[in-house]
Image 1 (cartoon, rainbow, N blue to C red):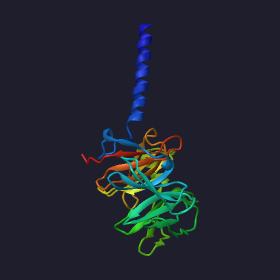
Image 2 (spheres, rainbow, N blue to C red):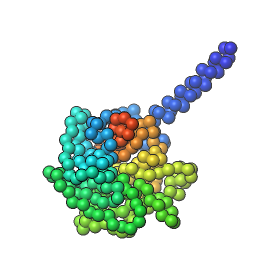
Image 3 (cartoon, rainbow, N blue to C red):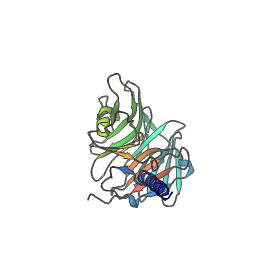
Length: 278
């Protein structure tokens, strides 16, 4: 009886240890430059329950959008103070970037909306490149003066993968030639799995290491790429910490923020302070 009891205890301890390893780490492998022990979680106001994109401004201040509302929100994560400005009616708004005093908002069909102070009006630039595409990620390449929009889901007869297109902020024109492409085969090889899913939901450039990071809510992955889309590394992200990651942004000092839409509860933003390379 004593032996059986001890065996049960050992099994239970193993289960608890395994569960702890799954719920404890945010990224596998370890994300160099970030100390997960210093992670902070901010619970968002109910008006941002369906937060679909955000951009860091300064001092824990962010600008954010909701999935279906044409409103721009300004939120302080420490005080939970919130301001909103209506710029358009109901739609499918996916991501946001800030260039100077101007905000650019991406719609799922690839259209880009430009809004300037006092944020009560807008200009829309139509994405008219042929083919069925759905977008959720928008990145500002300051060195090129371009916005880069990344597909969530694209179906082509020849291959499946992630495709990015660019929008020139000087000419206000889309380039029909893809900015970069990442094939699913590349992702499968990195993960050693042909059953993986990867549908990007947000992306941002790191201000320190200059890499492009792409979050995939479907597939629970974080891709590290060169700015030209060359795939370097893939992190598996913890679904306990990231039940529905829909936004990513970096502070000027490298601190990383990732938002979760609150489909079954409260929306959150997780902050990972940047501690530098070891």
